[in-house]
Image (cartoon, one colour):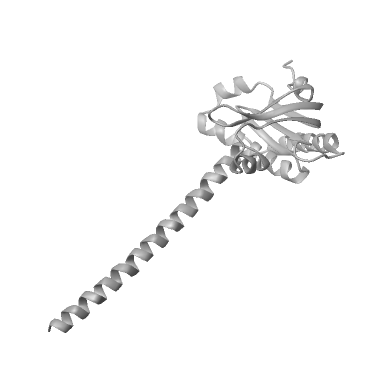
Length: 196
């Protein structure tokens, strides 16, 4: 009987160890998933090369970049539109349009910088020289106009897009406690389209 009890205790100890290994494996897997999720969130606010530099330990990231083209787009009368549409409809419209613009950014090889309200900003030539930076952005601009015209047939409100484009030198870097990618310079100076 004592032997049987000792054998059961040894079995119980083995099961407990196996359980600890399984718990450790589950915990490591949960950490891996959370790390991937956190990295994806970071990639939503910063360009991938900047995320890699931050992960590499750089604390001050500031670059002078030449031959960059920046595009800034927004919608005519958006403030009025936002007062006429219900919040879910307004967000749905922007989500639909900006998702299409994100696909275009990938297609034309330009970097999405940010969206603020109805404003959408991309740049080309930031991470490696591209002789066709202005052409790529201009091609994307034309595709954005075509996309808005096509989507207007389906959207609950008609959109009219304004686009400004400029090329030149920029200073770019990460600023703030909540990291944000910042641009300033000739390439951005004339980008914002003026309201009529």
